[in-house]
Amino acid sequence: MAFTARSGGSARTQTALAEINITPLVDVVLVLLLIFMLTAPVLQSGVEVAIPKTRSVNQLTEERQVITIDKEQNVFLQDKPVNVNDLGSKLKVGEHKIVYVRADERVPFGAFASVMDAVKHAGVTNISIVTQPLNQK
Picture 1 (cartoon, helix red, strand yellow):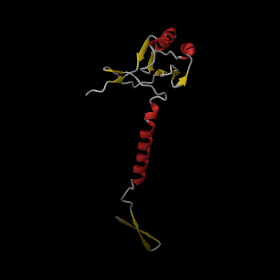
Picture 2 (cartoon, helix red, strand yellow):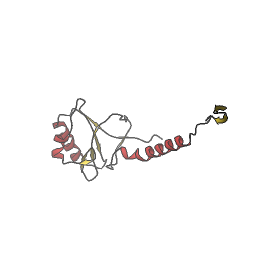
Picture 3 (cartoon, one colour):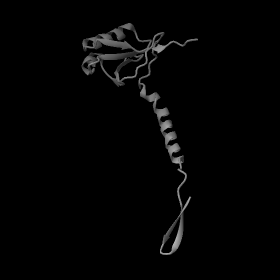
Picture 4 (cartoon, helix red, strand yellow):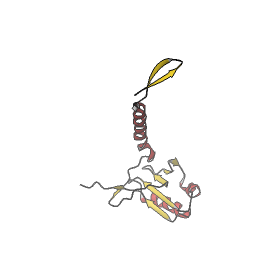
């Protein structure tokens, strides 16, 4: 489509922009996709534990307080090392009072029980144990 404008006796022809260049948009979307793909595994948890496998597993979608016990029986609250004796004072007990416990499958029951006892003494009534689903064959 061409427009003719007359100003002062001379005629100029202008062409309208009929196409929108979407290449920069595609570039930005692909970069964002790449960033999300690289950062998604990091968002789960920084402490590496071998979580036991069970048949019934619920997916977690809300913000949560996670206590992790690794195979050396080190205790972490939200990926930060914490002493078991200080665990009760560092827990943020909100209106939901839900705490998730991730323990390596090789942790002795005594270490697991002491963490559970510290959480209960902090006033938490709802404690969930994090597991992985069994591989269905």
